[in-house]
Image 1 (cartoon, one colour):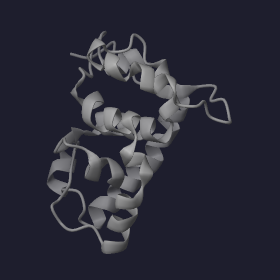
Image 2 (cartoon, rainbow, N blue to C red):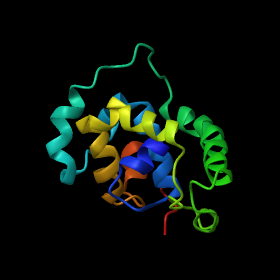
Image 3 (tube, rainbow, N blue to C red):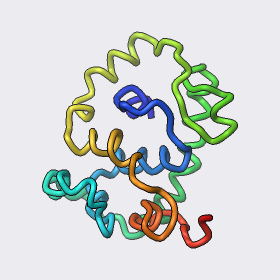
Length: 152
């Protein structure tokens, strides 16, 4: 989560969008399953095809996304407790860095992480959040990870 917050050009994220970004950072090969793939991101489609498949086949993406939520909730609460994300924004389901400095060793590890240099990662953290999220044509529907039929 800190890698996303530190690497993205975007200042704040809706919690559900952030959860989805986190999921795709953990399982980048699943980006290929977004269907239809957003036209605005077609330039990344070839790059995403080159992401190798995981060693283990994930049978139910939606279930894994659902089960990951408990870990994500704990993680974001820990970041809030360490005053690395803004608690007031989080009450409104917005994830935003607090502006406080990340401890040196953690920041060094983030800066050394090669993931941030990957094209697919830049797509996930900078481009995917700009795509419509709700509704029949949104990322919820395209990814099939979240219910979208009742979006307003």
